[in-house]
Image (cartoon, rainbow, N blue to C red; front, side):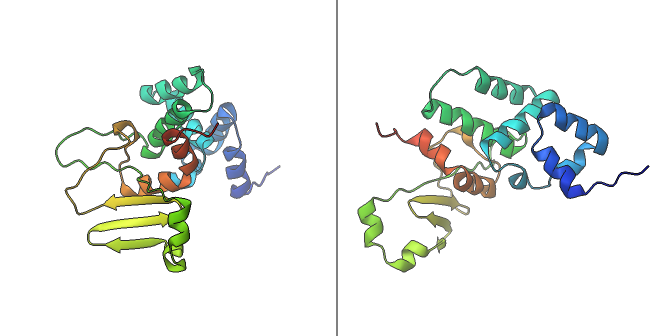
Amino acid sequence: MSIQLKKENVLNAYKNANYEEKNLLEQLFGKEIFKPTDVRERIKTFEEALNELELRSADGDKYAESLYDDWHNVITENNDLTAFLKLRIITEALNEGWKPQFVEDERRWYPYFRLYTKEEIEKMDDEIKARVVARSSSNAYAYGGVSYANAFNDSAYVIANFGSRLAFKTAELAEYAGKQFIDIYADFCFIPKE
């Protein structure tokens, strides 16, 4: 008797599986089949970032294990502390084990946001509102309504508003995180309305 499985069905089963089920599928088909090469394809939600750390902690990654444990041991409401813990987990998962070393010539990246008031947005013409990317000098900007991502690629100008725990190894990952997880960044940065 032979069984034929579609790769797409196996990958979907893996995506929706818990740790034990994923472990079984990895034993049957091998780990590599389930890992897209681009981490941005694997991690699109907080739950997927948390799952990534669960898998890494099971493989002996102590830092991933400590972050995973921190999340499950925290007693808090949905506030800035919860958002910060989520962002630490997302950052670690997207960086795939990379950690800043704080050595000369090391670059670290983070999402950067610019907020506009309702009045400022209403004063913008349609072209500015619709602009996806604007470039000026050596600075690249990506506007998204009331948010803003910024990368200073060629400049010696450095800001560390979010701190080293939320730094990314590439500008692309920082931009992805800022756009993909903007609601969590907002929960971290702003006091919710009562």
